[in-house]
Length: 328
Ligand SMILES: Cc1cc2nc3c(=O)[nH]c(=O)nc-3n(C[C@H](O)[C@H](O)[C@H](O)COP(=O)(O)OP(=O)(O)OC[C@H]3O[C@@H](n4cnc5c(N)ncnc54)[C@H](O)[C@@H]3O)c2cc1C
Image 1 (cartoon, helix red, strand yellow):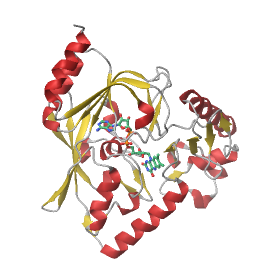
Image 2 (image 1 turned 90 degrees about the horizontal axis):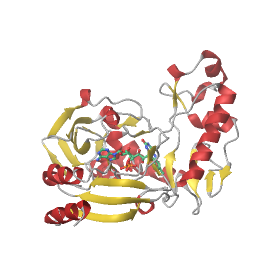
Image 3 (image 1 turned 30 degrees about the horizontal axis):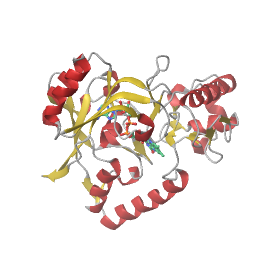
């Protein structure tokens, strides 16, 4: 019996709480719809069994990564030769004014849960694809609201034990968190506190924003949202800032789409991958695209922006299975 067969047999003991797939195409689990397979994909539904399952998986010596809803990823065409783990627990409960949601909750369910109760603070974040775990990892945000503003505590499995990390220790920053420096941690849940709002205002705002977003990002569009992070004003030289139309500078940030538009990114393509004609920072897969083509297009855009403005755009999207690409 090979070591891997033995491990799979041991995992069988947890079959009511986990799902193990071998050679699973990651294109089926990512919004971009491209990339190769994971050697194993393991979905774990209960945090209680996670430490034991992870410890068994580690015996395989294969590299292991944790993914969520797959909406912010570019998976390499050759896939990931290791274990892709997903924590799929998705309960959302409320007690004494605090919500406890598991990291496998679909983000939209978390938003709907709160908007239905007339609570305010995340209604503008409606329509962001993915799960709560991914939103915590990247400190997701939209229209002036950010997850760091209402999360009190995050429950993590740090490889040794399950413990709570207070907001102040999560290292949240624009589209970033301290969890990016602990890629072996698995985010399990978050406690969130939202204020009471005007229920009809909260619901109307959410409905309006969702309608706008669905036009910009049709639900069937194979993409990862914005490819590049926006630029913080503090990152830009006075000369560069002077070229940016003042009304575009909001909340201390300049949309990277403006820089991309200046270099003519709209409509550029590489094989089956294109930049949207209506959004300079949106790259999508026409259906036949490959990850290598996404990378070529990203590199071309970065290099054109660098030549024109002397600044290096940073990807918001996360890379999986690439030896030569850095996820920020
Ligand atoms: C159409 C579209 C629009 C978008 N709009 C926005 C927007 O307005 N604002 C915004 O912030 N983002 C936006 N995004 C990007 C994306 O939806 C968010 O980043 C989302 O929060 C990612 O969640 P996910 O579950 O899909 O994460 P994944 O893509 O699965 O993973 C992203 C990263 O999180 C890590 N991760 C995920 N779950 C866990 C976990 N449980 N434990 C540890 N690490 C984990 C992964 O390792 C990976 O590095 C958009 C994407 C699309 C496709």
